Structures are given as structure tokens and as C-alpha cells.
Image (cartoon, rainbow, N blue to C red):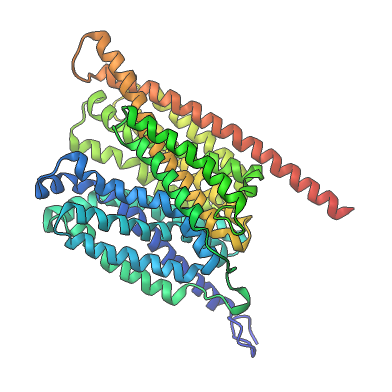
Length: 491
């Protein structure tokens, strides 16, 4: 009997198993695409929403914020629920919730009902984001984890890149409701693929049952919401409300840690943070997301004011970064599998630091090349780091913790994004305003934009170097542990 055949005990043959893994990865890729598309496609519709509902920008921006806040506050709880009750039903539920909420968004008669529907959509996205990474470790072999992570990274970048352009076309042709209703056929296809392809656990491999930590969930959600709001309200200008929210978030962290020590089945095993590799990976993920947010917040001003590009060219040039990330992610996964995740993390962070340093030079005389070349280096380094970091963490996690660790990885990235939006935006504003006032001008000149770009990416380079130092320390610890394990086996 050949290897390709099915044996008498009903075991799945190798080609059948590879086909099953392929369909499973297709469903996970579509789920990743949906959640990232939900983030990026709504922002392009804000002007149309302002006109339709006669609302202010501060009001319509909650269409974006409600989605992000729901993901940020609920993603760890989503992962924990999946670890307790099974990943497959929770992921299917997340896809169904996201798709149903998309229908509600597209039919919403008022702005506040739209915002409420976007919150529900964010809950579905939190389930999808938390569980796609967890499913990779369960679906593919350890040797192919990097490639699978690269595929998901590419789909996330494609969703981010596709959102603004697809949203613009849909609004121009069908109106703003189409940017939400487009998720419905995609969601139905994703649900059908996931239902067919994702593995069902047998009775002996069921997720561990236990009492859900409701108190910890509420405390963590309120803490994360307070922090996210502190970083987003005021558009980079901190006031009493922002400071009060940060104080509330700090108190929430203390109460959450205390609550986790007193419950039998905590939401997060705090002892896991004693593992220096996990703690370093989460810290690096947060730092790198903060750095990358600068390219989204600051680059448009540099391109329009510093280089004098029109709106159409700004959009085209800005698409370079996400496009490079999407194309690089698949290669990054293969490099991670071949040369090792920790080595590629160091290489990726080196590339990231190099790219941000080149951006800090802000050489406007070189024109568009002064942005395109450095951002290509930056985004390739980012894709290499992100893929390798996810692979390193998820390949070393036990089956009973994959959901919550996946949630923590996504949480660290989201917290980095909201931190970067505020921190990098504030640094750019202060630096460019200082340069502008020094010349006595009342508008953002080319020189002022270049100065803001320089200072912002000098800060970004320092943060990237800090992340690189953490990666080197983590790599050294991994080598020591491997040598110790080898010595113990030989003894």
C-alpha cells in the first residue's frame, strides 16, 4: 500500500492531510483579511458619514475607534474563552458575529446605531484575530509554522493596503453602506471554509473546562479601554481627561494583577510573564508597532508638505509600505523556517532600525526616493520581525494556552498602535511647530515638515534599537537554554 493511500484504520493519507491543511490555512487567511479590512476600510468613509449624518469629525471618528477599542479590550478574553471551550466553535462564532454585524452596519439608520454595530463587529474581529494565530500551531507542523505565520502576515498587510482603495471605489459607485456590506459575502465564504476545514477535537483532546474569570475580564477590559482612550482622545494633545484616564489605567493594572492572584482559574497566568522570552517578545511587539505607527501618522505630512505631492500621489506613495509588507511576509516565513525564528527576529529589527534611521535623515532633495527607499527597508524588516516573533512564541506554547497567548500577542500590537498614534503624532507636532515658529511662519512649511520627520524618526530609531537589544538578549537566553538541555540529555 502506498503512502498516498488510506490505511485500514481510517487514518488520513499524506496528500489528503496536506489538502486539509491547505483549506484550513485558506479559511484562517480569509479571517485575517476580514479583520484587517474592517480596520482600514472604514476610515475612508468618514467624510461621507459626516455629510450623510450631518455630524462632526469627533463624532464620526467613533466609527473607527469603537471597532479598535472593542478589539483591544476583548482580545485576551476571547483567547481565554477559546482555550476553555474550544477554538473551532469560538472562531466560527466570531466569523458569524462579524458578518452579522456587517449587515447591521450597512443598514444602520443613525450614526450611533452604526457605532454600536461597529462595536459588535469589533468583538467578532477580536475572536478572529485571537484564534487565527492559535490555530496555526494546531494545524501545521512546527517546521512550517514560520511559513504559515508569513501567510497570515501577508493577508493582514493586504487587508490594510486594500481597505482605502477598495473603500474609495465602493463609496464612489455604491455609497458608504457598501464598505460594510462587502464583508457579508466574504464572511459567508470564510465561515463555509472554516466549517469544512478546521479540525474538530476529539473527546480526549477537548479544551480544559473551568470557571471563566468574569471579574478579571471586566477589570482588564476597563483598564485597556481607559488606556486606549487616553491615547486617542485629544488627538495627541494631553489634557486633564487624558491624565485621569492614564491614572485609572494604572490603578486598573494593579487591581487586575491582584485579582489574578486570588482566583482559581485566572484569565492570564501571570507566572508566564516570568519567562523572559515571552515577556521580551510581547515588549518587542509593542515597541515595533509603536514605531510602525509613525509611518502612518507622520508620513502623509512629510509627503504633502515636505515633498509637495498632491493628494493622489501621497496615496500612491503611502501604499508602498503595506505593499512591501505583504510581499515580504511570505519570504519572511520561509526565512524563519530555514534559519530559525530568533536569528530572523534580530535581522528584522536590524533592518527596521536601519530604515527608520534613513527616514530620520529626511533628505527632501532626493524627492520621493527619500521616502520610498527607507520605507522599503523598514517594512521588510518589520515583516521579518513580525513573522519570526509570532512563530517563535506560538511554536513554544502548550495547547491549553495558545488562545490567550495569541490574544496577548495581538494585544501588544494593538497597544503599540494606539500608543504610536498619540506619541509619534505629538513628537511630530512639537518638532514641526518649533521649526515653524523659528521662521515666523503660520503654516507647515517644507522645512518644518522635514524637521518634524527627522525628530520623530530619530525617536523611532532609538525605540527600534531598544527592541533589537531585547532580541539579542532573548537570543542569548535561548542559546543558553538549548545548550543546558543538550548537556542534561547527554548526562
